[in-house]
Image (cartoon, one colour):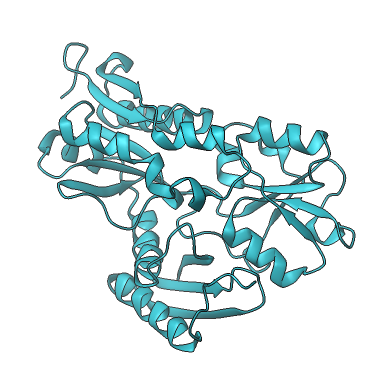
Length: 315
């Protein structure tokens, strides 16, 4: 067991949300194992993505290097032994981990819904024709363009405070965040309303925290087993298999959500043209043990319906 002399080192990015997730992980480990706070050390790791995102806050994530920029240095620290576990937002994680690392512990999932944030209107449906909406998420932008082609979409990235400042400055009338992040920051009141999945299907794994470890680290494996949430893991098995079979990345608008239903899983998924002009959606119901197979099968079904160049940007 870890103690003050040999603490378990928890690696994380330094953003307020990342730190909140690391603190939640530590608190759950302390409670599960009856350990004091000094048995753990939270290690903040600055990633290439943090620097590039600050420099290019109004450019799409794909143009500054994609999701991997926010995990590379953390995973290198994990492989080298600089940290013992790494805490991640699962919606931001690539579907494959580097050799020697495992992502097999998930905390209980938070609210999966998108939050509608605006200083002027209460709901997405209340936006005036031609309103300017800010988002850096390809998934959200494509969904908005499909449902409200009259809206004008602009790039919009940054932490909660940055986005609220941009709204105050008139850069946009509204933007979107994840309800899960707002809840974990104690800032749920920032959301004017939560958007139900039936209106806007969330990103794969939205609201879930994953904890990565070295495959050969038995101590970390034993500690994390006590805080793993089985139901969250089952849902993510379906969603991430769906994403993997689609070769999903930050450059492809994909949404997916699995729910427990009657002892099994109900998986919904959709793929969108980046300009929102077309959506292909489907669903699967399956047993829990078939979660990954069902996710991959749904992905193949949607891809079979998609014409060549479906994910390409139109001029």
